[in-house]
Length: 145
Image (cartoon, rainbow, N blue to C red):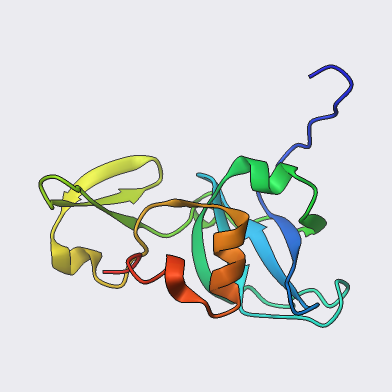
């Protein structure tokens, strides 16, 4: 990558996410490629969320964070290493229809009832995350049990 500086992604970084309506959403980086999208939507990039209330927490592709479209506005360290991990997510085997739970880099067998209410493990592109923030759930309809 001669001549191109790589942007380093840091756990706790808060990104401003420009929305198609001119407003801003914000996302905080978790371990395991996770991003917590704040409930707070702002009219200006300076109006950063005050608390840690999230609409949803999903996986995000690395290229999204390195593209430069989303801007780091601050870093909010997590209180503990444990808190830096996203919550458990569910995996449904497309062939066997068996359920598993993914958490902290590990996968374990699970029942359907254990997966109820969990996000389905997936890595999201920026347009899918923005669509979900904007209330268009075409990418979201099958991602909860």
